[in-house]
Image 1 (cartoon, rainbow, N blue to C red):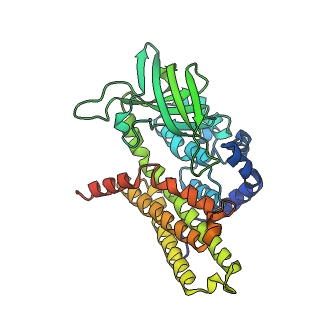
Image 2 (image 1 turned 90 degrees about the horizontal axis):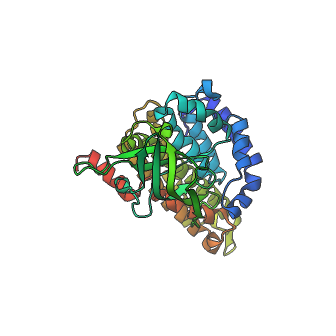
Image 3 (image 1 turned 135 degrees about the vertical axis):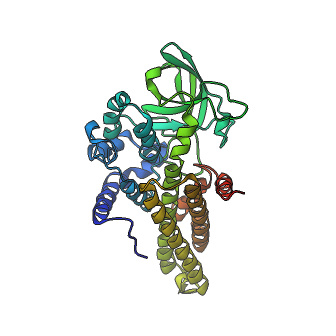
Length: 383
């Protein structure tokens, strides 16, 4: 099905980023998976070519592009190439909106040039070992003492946290209110070289092997008040405001990965024979792949509409939850069916479908579980 969401310029950018990933990422990706993180030099190269500064304002060395569509193309191409570049996605799609919307001019002047060049990669730390999706239960504290906050606590599941120069950390600066457990949360941009800031063990994940995911701890970390993002006590409101983009990012990757699974499986079923016949010729294979193709097409239609709505600042949290729920559940169905058509080879990690299967599972968890998405959608229906 034809897509109308992108212009000719977007498609030119798609070709450029595809060539860049083929040249700069794919040859090193197996090494990145083994070591558990992407080489910092890759991000410096992206910065040099302007890929990290696409939305950074011109006065700070970026291109000043307001539309999200180039970011969407980048995410689609990375997924299509089988590259799980989670720290890149966090840097561009999760952290940048907070800095653009809520950082003051002095902070932007300090941080945006290095943000766009790749010299300062970023991460965001929300989840704690005992909180999960319940952000209102955050217990990492930031006690103000003069011109600094003294931070104590721990975070987990931090994508890109091992090599980030700045980490946006959600802290509790005052106790929760009886009527509002979400009150009293504040967003601090913490310098990872600060004394007491410790990057803990790298978490050994089922999939996304090149995406460094770690634990962070804070032991009397002194953070200048000048590094607070926005107003004290308003972090939950800020987080909610960025939820549509965070969930759209996950959905874009889910659809692109599902499409890649179908393409790999079509190729495999043409080359693999059973009982002397290519398994692509069996009616069951045709029907399964036809269903998968229809699912991917439906997901793409949802994504394209959501991208347009997001660019128009009209994508609501509930709509984004609906898109994420459907596309990630679809991804799980499609990748599982495609693995089944590979037979025993689908369980062997040297085959791309096995990696797609492992990488797909987390999309129904991160950014809000499917159960949380259903709760958000039901609430928007007055249920």
